[in-house]
Image (tube, rainbow over all chains, first blue to last red; front, side, top):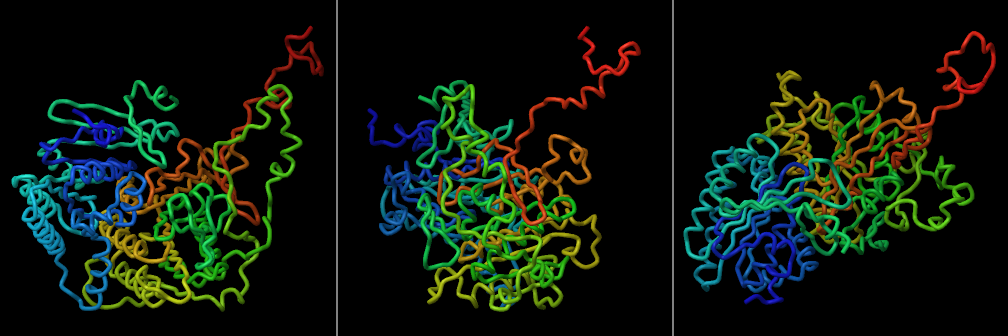
Length: 252
Length: 362
């Protein structure tokens, strides 16, 4: 039985994604010049509605961004954080402090240490979540390709992602990874995650160029089933529609 | 849609998404960005081949900061930043070269046949709000009284701090250190709560040019050393996000491969590309004779919002006049040959003599 209050039924993006509790590893690939951030912000809506707990590792946007969009979509991340249902690891903010320490104290640079510290923090938080109750726990990483910008080599990044995926072997633990693809290293990272994921979501810009009617293309792959949607972002939400009925959906 | 933020001069608070906006200095650019540059963002400008127009954009950005009493940091390894400062355009009261079309539009554009469309808007652009920026005159330089009172710092990369750095070229880490110190000293961090709030404008000219190569490296290594550029932009974005600051970075795009540039664009919030007609076949194109190049808004990130303000498929062009740099929508003239051209192209028959009659007329 479906309920109208369930966002996975009423929300156009979530009803297109059809994320279920059995989906353990969800991978979002963001292609060049596309913005897949709306997938994560919409997923939060579903996860918080299902009383899931979230551990968010953010490398591309700050908390304020997620909070503002959350308010638009009808959820409050600050409230969730206050309740202990959300843990945010803002690596951008952490790295500002890291510049200070690196420059002032001449700390010997070991980039892979950053990734180890991040994993340890996340693992502790997941264990804390699991110990409190049986509700689902989601690890959300946005976006993993920025580790390459930080000078971390591909091997340790794939190792980190692998360890996060291994956490999903525990009951009720799920992973959502977003990664931007531009360079060859980005592609290797994305292909590695795509190979093991349960749901693969690919967000791309239009091949034909920019359009005022359509923002981009979203492809959802689950096992052998592939579905393609066009989407358009608005100030108050995102609309999805099949490529063949674009005009009908836009102007109805 | 915006309300003026009285606590920080030269800024407006967007009621649309809560972003604090500041002017880019160019009147015609701010509406394209949704009202101005959001504070806490990195603007990346892909330079034109000669770096002429991108430098003008940077000068406008810095001049606007000086007039709005913002703190400024100018960094360059190619040009002396003090020289950039001296060449900033002077502020003036009104538009130095207003578009003639705008003034007489009401009378001349009256439709005779399709009169029912008379009152419809001519473009899909958002309604104009009160502008926070100033007008500048490119033919005159800024007065010293404006410069002397301002909080301006320069970075030339001549004296680099020693110590271990994770960058191949220590110049990148030294510039980051300078920016971090400036933010800390001026209490620009969001967590700081100074009595008088202001904004820091960071202007970086020609980042990643040949002058940014590490020692004992040739220009052919530029694409191999792009890791420094990626890391710098990530740290710069992290720094700027955590402060009341805006960074305006120009990059000599023609030196880098497309993939590298796209990665840099991903690490920035707003990306602009200036594609000058100079030296190309478009230079002599009659339909583009009124313009100096194409203006591309490659990226306009949706910060604190779901939808980007990028206007989509509209093509823009820029024009540099004597006193003003302007960006406008590309309007190609109708494809009608002039009378003179037609006459030249028609071969004259010997029996027709000097007659101006068309060949089809008897």
